[in-house]
Image (cartoon, rainbow, N blue to C red; front, side, top):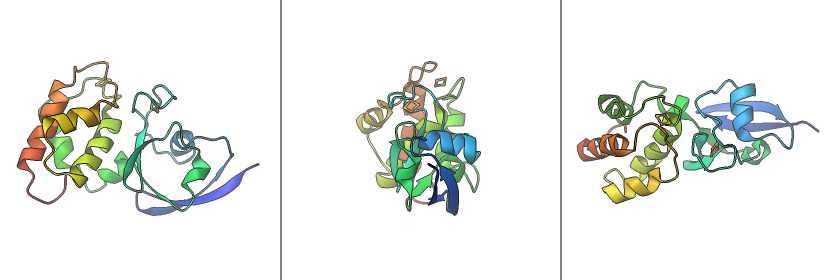
Length: 158
Ligand code: FES
Ligand code: FES
């Protein structure tokens, strides 16, 4: 039976009717038009569907939409609402992505990392990236881009 849920999506109060079995990823993409989270594995393993739930990275393919009632969801659309962030610019400068399928999830997770720890070391960056599968890049240029922005960051947006 459908139930209306209310939550904050990228800063806006959002109401949507969901079935009890519907996953957050499907509701975001198919009912709310938020397309940055991607369907990769559907089993919580690849990281392509990552969003922030109350500021923490979660896999939206394994969370039921009804679980986010009253909570706050932020996706890449919210992160880049005011334009590309320094982190995104650094990824562009390093040509960090090829097909880009993994990019939204990686940007969301590394945004969380840099918000909480503006100057992570390489091992901390690698640890965070270990939850994301990228079939194109080999990761080094992703790590380099994050390390650059971490080195330069002295305040302001990530
Ligand atoms: S689609 Fe969610 S972790 Fe792969
Ligand atoms: S750039 Fe293609 S999967 Fe990462």
